[in-house]
Image (cartoon, helix red, strand yellow):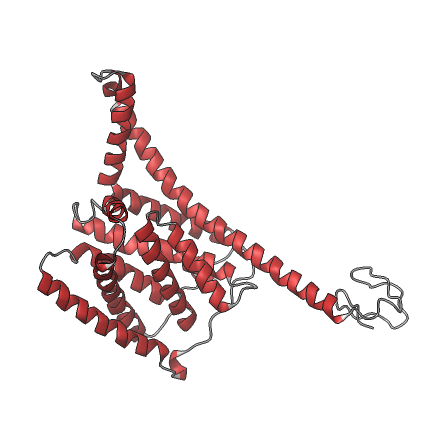
Length: 329
């Protein structure tokens, strides 16, 4: 007979299940259907909680490495400027306040370099972590080959999406404090070495964030979670990590779109390319010419409309089944 608890096959004359030890009495030979459904739901909920916990761990690792790099640089800067804190005309209190503002300013001025260092350390740490466990980071986060044409339109769509989002946000009746927070967050973007910013803001940020959020975190959320809920949870997790209200909003939208790309191709390579070109567009799309802005905005709408057509086009050779999530952490 089959054990009603663990589904183990047992001899017909057995008194106890050979796997879980359940007494095989006449009363236990069949579990009522509601109880069976409850057991299945409990198992699914357990997988969901485990997947969410692992996803949060990867995101926290990403944040901790960023915080550690910024913290080390802040401490290094503070040690070099320590003397000014005690010689401030306003006393020690004003000196500490001035020092705090100086540290924040120094971090913003070096944010491209700090982002490059923290992103590189994140990818290296994850690579070493999975190598020690005899696994491949590429396999675990779902970096698989896709048609070159898909990468081309993802790059084009990523650029168009940045233009569309930037212009659309400027039209929205949002609180001035939100715009001020966004401007403060990106005030030094495009003011330092352009090659450093391309490597940091575009390439490394796109790579590290996609590996962390879509590759590792989302694949763990996917266990025991419906597809639509996986996209929503992954997008919210990505958005929350972007700080200011406007950044949270457009990052959540971006995360949802990249999650859909991930499901469409069974690979995060298209979302990596789209993310890199989305961030890269912010380095050159800076203009006060209203006619140029309008022209680029219209073009971006056309590109995005074409991208939606390509996404929903049903051709079997372009729609591989989504890859299964890795089995463990």
